[in-house]
Length: 248
Image (cartoon, rainbow, N blue to C red; front, side, top):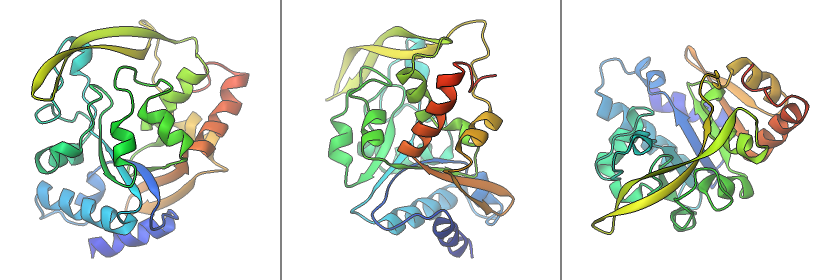
């Protein structure tokens, strides 16, 4: 039953075979249909449904972000937990070699652009050689599965592009585990200024993208799909008029 529901959702969101996508997910959307299932079964069911639907000629990116590096902790793609949901932690145990080496905004990568993505820079979060610029150039689709569009990390890439006044570049220095060794990494991250509520407001994002986003319900949850270029253009129009648009 749940697999059929997922496939219907993908169609409603206008996903196609061979698409390149980045998906933010909330596995609570799966629990509503599979309350008796284990977390492992739920994650596996969702992941296989998505991967099979897109196929090997497309690309699937799944965030597994870990912010401990910014607090001086070592990043190890084999052991560092995902702090953005259950799916990333399930993937960590199943496909550790598919996890990128960016110490903060790391992703699990499957499909066509895997090698290109692994060649992206890992020393600047939202730079010109980062994964976020690559998905912008390739016009990936961004999916919010049962979660708000305010969680879309690509929004921070847009903030960086337009140098919003409530964020600034900060350098973090810690270690990553690479090629069986601990290596020191200098990492540039466009962070929010202290004493400012720089959290992105859901309503502002939804207003900005309403003409470009595809929305569909999955049970009691709303899901969204928008391309990186449409998202960029929609937010660009707002930020150019009001630098603080996303946060106030």
